[in-house]
Image 1 (cartoon, each protein chain N blue to C red):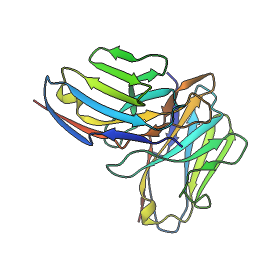
Image 2 (cartoon, chains in turn brown, orange):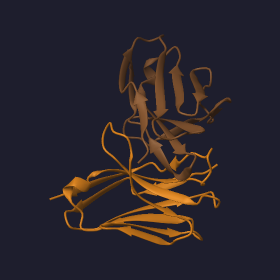
Image 3 (tube, one colour):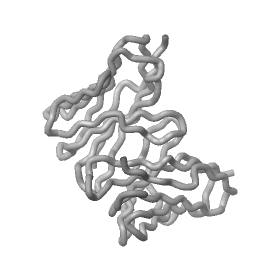
Image 4 (cartoon, chains in turn yellow, brown):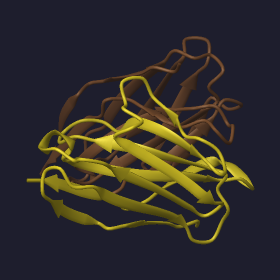
Length: 116
Length: 113
């Protein structure tokens, strides 16, 4: 099946620094990618929809200036957590739909962010 | 937007028993309903899905039923095994390129031997 690659898998950073997370579709083109955040023992909450070549659409309550999303190509979306704080510590997961087969949403392996 | 409710939040069964998890959705335009199994720290794994043009789908010990009128779908696991223990999430979406899956809050299934 289709593969979504996400890097890094784990990152520790100091409070106030920025962290970039990459999400790549390896064997299909994705005009749209999705970013989710999952706190411990909670569900996956949609943060934003990343559209190739245009601005991302953010869910209510998600700060677009804090969570910068760039979708520069049909296979790559990046999420940058700017000026990270301990409350941003979470599990971030990206996903994408193959534009040639829209039913299934493929997930990356996730990035565990710990902000000290 | 879509809202998905999932029950129960925790479920404990004995090995060999059946387990049922139920979800309701709010957007009548949603037409795709997958179920995911997630182990701690891992990505969600698709275990079964159903589209709105069918009412039931089965894959070995796992089955999903869909009632479009009631906007309700359920996961059925028969002959449960300890390795079925995990967190299960239901989700719903429309089959459109820009539409994300919206997840229920999850059910922690524990199967004791």
